[in-house]
Image (cartoon, rainbow, N blue to C red):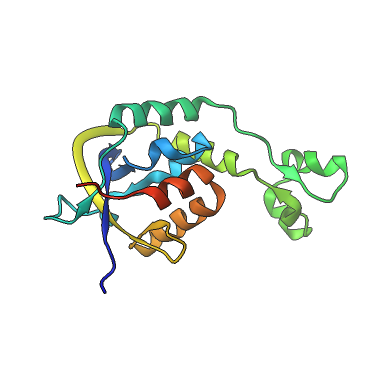
Length: 179
């Protein structure tokens, strides 16, 4: 019994001198909208239009994806939080260089919210130019029924997404080729 391979569409875009793909199937499913930045992947991880196979449809337009990234890039980035410490430590990251915090053993107490990383990444993705071309990534079902990429680098990201975002996890379980 072979593993079913499902092809997920990615809209190609140029970002400076690089090509990236924006996941066009799972994009609308994410519960936390800032996580869409995780669905932008290097084009090297994608293939052209494969012959045959089970292809999922695009569920979002490339222009809408670019607009959402631009909207996220304009959001205010949340400040880091400090765990298990006094209030003065919450200001330490503003006053003391990170290297000194690390040397003092305090940096591990600073918690940067996931959203802060995502919004910073969105700022780096601001120059996306859609190319009007689609490439695909091969996905297979894991033991829990969730579709995950075959590419190991993408698999790590999407596995974490399946763990953190119920919208993605639900869509990745329900995704199936029709007809």
